[in-house]
Amino acid sequence: MDAVARAAEAMRRRPPGALTVKGDRDMASALDYEIERDIRELLRTATPEIGFLGEEHGVSGAGDMQWVLDPIDGTANFVRGIPLCAVSLGLLHRSEAVLGVIELPFLGNRYAAAQGDGATVDGKPIQVSRTDRLSEAIVAIGDYAVGEDAPAKNELRLALTARLAESVQRVRMTGTAALDLAWLAEGKLDAALTLSNHPWDMAAGVAIAREAGAQVVDWDGTRHGANSSMTLGVTPALIDDTLGLLRDAGRQ
Image (cartoon, rainbow, N blue to C red; front, side, top):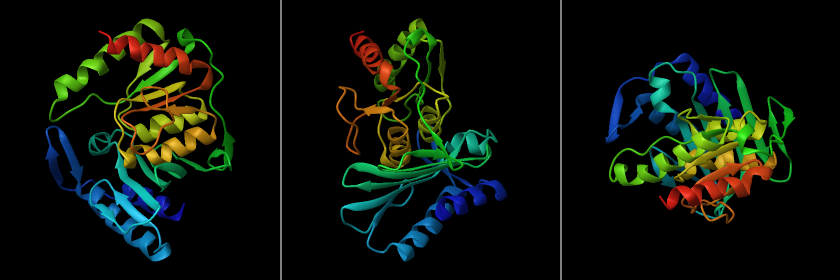
């Protein structure tokens, strides 16, 4: 909680700074790097026995336990002043997300969960929605791919978007997987579908969504882990229908 609060306060008080191009249409701000260095050192001092994986500076330490940080999830939004961005800090035990804290600095909410303890927003318990019809579902889909092989990767994303548009109440693309999973946990969304899996984007949100009652799986319906290829979080009554849409999209 202290680490995430510290990062969120930096986002509220400081500008993005200079941008570093990491690849085709992919960037990080100076503040991404600064927050990650600060939180890495804070956690190294507080929990020296736990390793650390950050989006910008990679891995340090070793062992079965690992902190996983996205200092600013939704950097493109943050740089443009769009308030849909988050700090996302998760804890992995081997490949299992067992703890997560997500703060939305410009929306004023903090989500948290630890395995077996339930999920909260601002200290109040939350649960996923009870939506049981796709026609009533609001579904978030992750950003389209950029960089190498983006056209090939986007074939499935575009096909799934088309299937969703035919079937669900509304499709949303917020630009931050952490926010999508937090809103799934709170019942604002009925599914959060990201057709990729970077641990720093997903670990905290997976822990929170699961503790709120969501099913979080890979593309084939198996339990999601750090090595999964996709991150599909869905309210339980819609899991079979959602996987069916993904299979249909993959056959196009």
